[in-house]
Length: 187
Length: 274
Image (cartoon, rainbow over all chains, first blue to last red; front, side):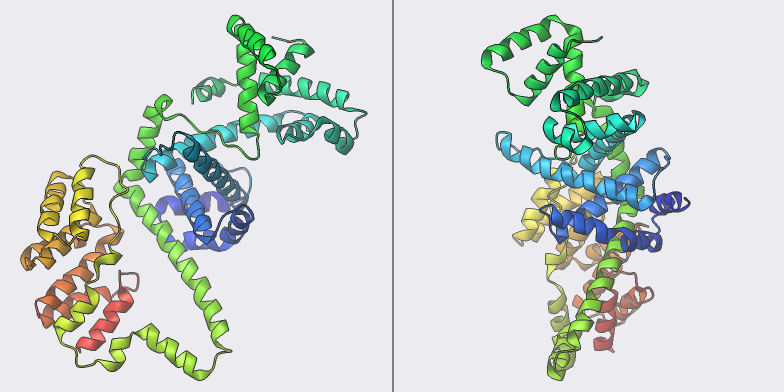
């Protein structure tokens, strides 16, 4: 697909007309998602702008390739940023009432590292068998074993439990074997 | 290392928080003694966070200073700030484009008078009814400085100069504000448009017109996307000085390009002055 690098380059060039096209193609979906998850218009605009800044600085730092469509990729980045925001306000309220003062730029910088690490873990999940993937995705969503058994057609929850153990150790093996993990672990 | 199902289950129970106090204590003792178990627990914890739909795995600032600093510096560079501007401009274009369309649609069902009223509001009260305003009166309609962006959120060295300057400015102590912003601007190698704006406006309020013109000229010369703001404020200085010729000349620089700051306002102002 050709548009990924076109849009990334437009961001790095600061090409307002092309960036406008990104808004036209992607903002409505992002807005819908944010609205469905406790956010408002200002939140959606903020997340979208930060996502574009994140892509800009990442591409500026080091060129990278997007394997899906640009729209799908941007949507994922926005989703993560929104999840991050929701968890952040939760954190800020609970930690002794102390809110760390950070520049917006520093915050985006941190979100870049988090996004890169998140992508590494997703990439690893894609490498295990479909069967394992389906089970683990549900497990990490905290769906009960008996519901997973029903949904995926296993005899009982015990079978699911054993599958979860097997698949998880396979996945963690793959994560640990990747040289990038050593570096990412430190984050 | 392969663990028995029993141990694997213990890891789950521990992370789920479903162990009794005694079980927790026993398990934590095991972790201390068994590095492999500690590792297994660690990666399980990480996977739960990373693959969760709801939580988010934040990076630790103190562990990643170098990487974060590098990115932060890059993000704060003039180049990337310009890209940010481009993104903001695209956003403004997009949202303005979407909104007026909705409004036009709504307006169709409104009676004529309401449309006329909204046009009056849109174009501005004084262009319709106050054609005989003096330059000073026109100036008075444009010197609300609330549109200046706040400086407080910026975390950088010298930021106390900025925040003290800003609060002096808000308190209308322009002399003190001018001192702070002047100190800030002369200490900085790179141009900070917002600080220059505050400096210039403080000077304008103190009627140090030549200094104000110089400050705004620096904005014009800055070669950033905000550069055109300099023309607008320079025009206000000339307006306050009753220098109509230079006001018009400066406003003419704005109306050359619709992307310039306060393009519409400048067009209006020109009509009033002519």
